[in-house]
Image 1 (tube, protein in one colour):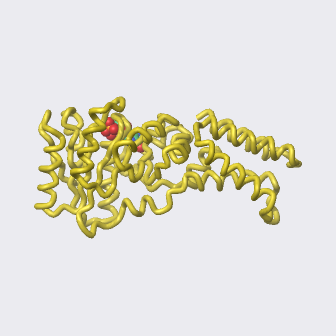
Image 2: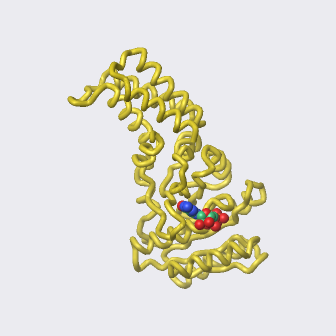
Image 3: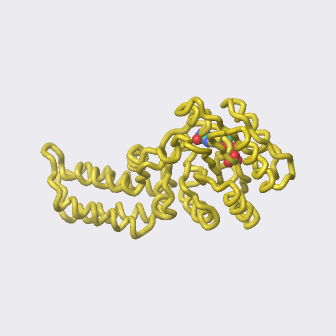
Length: 297
Ligand code: GDP
């Protein structure tokens, strides 16, 4: 996260200044802008942030006891929080099931998708202890993926509908949905095939699965450690499925959170949750404030 270091450096230099003249201000503003653009953040959104900081710096009343440089740092921080804003996304996703709620989880292999489903089931049960949750293993090409979901499902006390190896994913989903209605499941969480790279085959299958599932939420699972690449992946997925929210995993790693920034400014994808450990308790609502602080160091 090179950009985060640059940003941090800029703000730390600003903090050290005794006098924050107009020239220092313009220079700092420009450095912040460049750091964010280096992070592949969308230029228009960055420029909006910059002009907001500029206007506020000139017009907002600086509270007593706050220096101009502190004010500057705070305005940049608030701008990032705005960009990362996800108002209500987590609450909407984790809402009660008046009728059966269906979720599709999509993402690249290794992003943490299967783990996230189990974590999400656990979180749902914590909030709605009586909820009946069915996990559906639709990654029919990888027996190991089916088995993994089954094992994780048992750990969180949820039933898993397992596909037979090589079965048609669409057919498996149809059967699973029938079963889920018969058995009156409140939530159905569908694990879909992951790939190392995005290919047309996978995408077509996802599109078909989403149509059949009529999913209430299609959640894209992204690995924060992939940095800005996460935003490109999000754009690709959004061409085929209706991504309604993202889960950014592995934020417990030493990444600064550049992925969150690129994602929010490039793909417009709202981040609902973040993965904070390998443990099945490690899923939390995504707090823009915390990530902004982390990005700024
Ligand atoms: P999938 O291929 O997308 O289904 O990915 P998996 O669920 O198998 O996860 C890949 C690896 O990432 C596993 O070793 C998980 O334990 C790990 N993982 C998933 N989410 C997190 C997270 O939030 N933090 C950490 N540290 N590891 C994670």
